[in-house]
View 1 (cartoon, rainbow, N blue to C red):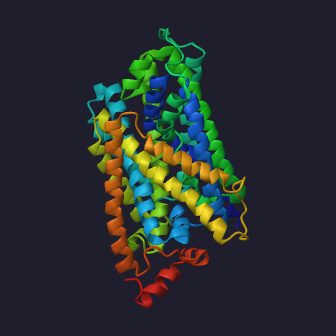
View 2 (cartoon, rainbow, N blue to C red; view 1 turned 135 degrees about the vertical axis):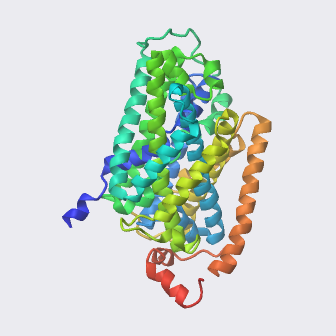
View 3 (tube, rainbow, N blue to C red; view 1 turned 90 degrees about the vertical axis):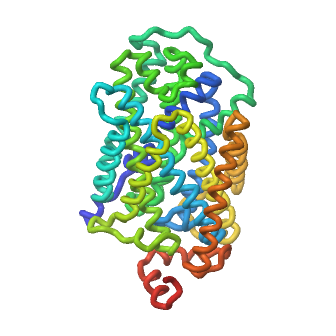
Length: 471
């Protein structure tokens, strides 16, 4: 029992895992673009986006309290509320595809930063991505202990570096020349609110701790608390960075830069600052990709247990790690990194497309809470979103608003929404035939919570296969 207790993750690990995917180089790109567009008032857009994401974290915490220790997370919650069809669409499109896409973009930004900063090494940009992805894949194949140790160190160095760089810039003690520019370019409410969709990307991913909640000490308290602390911590750190941007980086150059963090680091501390921010970019990639590989492999395992994905994804290795998922996610990250390589326009576009996918999955989380409260009002919950249905409804309305305003450019906005609709349509066709002929289940009929929980056990799959229901 003592050995098992040592393997449990504490509150610090929960915060670091939550922070792991929140802070990423694509977030630094979005932060630079948002601040460069409207100035320091972008912080207000960040606060609004952070609060909306906190409502999602609260909803996911309640769902986890009602259905604890579910490796599929949102997949199992949605299955119990709306049936398999919305579940597959939201999880494959809104979670797996979106996360792999965002990690590929992260890797592309990282490779650009490394090849630009260390050009004298003559290493191909994608070579850096291949090295890091391979090392992270190997680390994750060894299990949750190595994952937690790696994540704690990386998250600490990452947040510490960003905080220190932000403070140096905010109080004006950098080596570079300070910039004389206004604090704001827009202060009206409409301009600030219109930037919440850009700010949204700064706070996604805190919920990655939920699939490993069974490995957390005192999960009832530490899981929701860790996610809330992670969001709040990132909001503070990134707000300080915005003030640093104001002092050392022209707003127009910041908004147009494909790597605003490198621009800021060089303007702040010269070449040493550029190298430092390249180091931060490396930490950001390690942190986000490490969280994604571990979390997505667990989600794939949970969906495979429900026969929503090929059965091979649920097989663990000797370290009890779903190794097929680890391999699968790592390879897809390399593919998307190659597609978006050396293209700032592609990077920006993919970030916004990924935002739409992720927002849809967050809307489903709020709907799940409302449905299960109506269906199971007296079921025990160790955590419950306060103020009745108010916060989930605010989360739904706010997220829909951000989707409708995903870009200030009408042409880009229409292209993003069209591509997103096409992907969801393709997933809909796939989901219909998979459910009807592979799962042999009604497409839209919800599954009782106790049955969804039973799917976690390997015998559920074994019995259905023996009866010829699942093949």
